[in-house]
Image 1 (tube, rainbow, N blue to C red):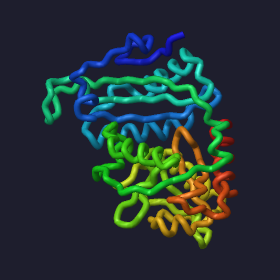
Image 2 (image 1 turned 90 degrees about the horizontal axis):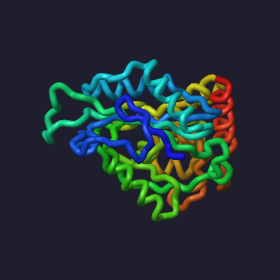
Image 3 (image 1 turned 30 degrees about the vertical axis):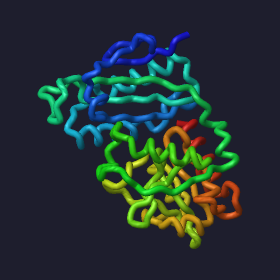
Image 4 (image 1 turned 30 degrees about the horizontal axis):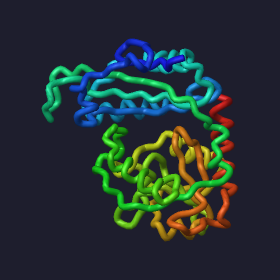
Length: 282
């Protein structure tokens, strides 16, 4: 059975879905996207994803073409049509088709596309084994807080990690780790402080990142939104990443150096379990 996707108001088989070759998302990466996890057939942290979508669209001066209730209905319809018990829903909103010109078209006619991917989230094998990370220079533009589809730098970084046998690449700027190519980066430093980059234009405001910081503070953990170097990460008690489609994954190796005892740490395991339990009880 063909997967059903959404394109500009129509639910149709993926083979029949079409977007104009003049769409600015295709020509310029002039588009915003969100990825929302699905557990037990339900959306995870969807309100937070909507809030970030609103913020990103505002930053590129593009109006939301569908109200929040409509976006929720769209997501739930795709989940039902494709019988997704576990996986993700991808949503993309571009400025739409127009004659190729760098300036924004007036008026814009946004293109809205959404589709599902079924994949195991709970039984992710990397949650048990941990993952390897390599570090690379952060070569991206300066507005990383906008969840734009202009992600060539991230794609290059992910490929570099893959070629070195690693799951993820952590990007480094001015000596400090900013974030992963598709994740937020955390360490439990040598003093037992949970650290991650503070928000700003230099990183994406991760939805799962926000949830883990909230959980850590509720549990009384020592938390600092403070940058860390690669050397500090290598000397950390634990390291882990967060992402909507991965939840929390322990980092057991950075640039060939074992982290902690070389296995998934108890703090990362606990955060993953707590986050999943909260998501399933919502």
